[in-house]
Length: 223
Image (cartoon, rainbow, N blue to C red):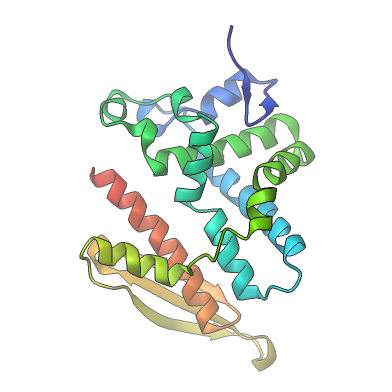
């Protein structure tokens, strides 16, 4: 009997579940589009939880906590706990290289599943499931999470790679509501990631988070 239940949700549309579990290496009908939507849904629902659970936290602290909860490593850990890797559809190359254990593939599948739940059952059900999965993690505060710039620097140093470069590329808005645009360059991986924030520091953190995710993905692809 086919098991159509995952993350506590029983799918009415089995094909939707199948697509969410299909990596791009296994064919054209894969989970990349669902992953895009799932990433946005996760960030919104977890941001809501962080905002509610930490009423005294400032923007920077909330941003760091959300980043610690919604990143490739953290999502892959949840995927492993939910035994998602064993259910993935992978191409032969990824199967041979142990793709079902790889953080980036597990995290992408988790995001795709969140989007699939949204498409299958709607906003309220998807929100309830995400809140159920992350409530304890948010309340615990994920320890004392390192900020994105620190995590990117440490990740590069661990691989003996040059440190990233940050450049202020522009600013917009009135003085009391100015937005800053920053580019983070990781030259060894040919990555230029951009971030915008209400301060240069906040913009750098957002750019660093994007650069780290891109560098980790490229590193995975090289192995």
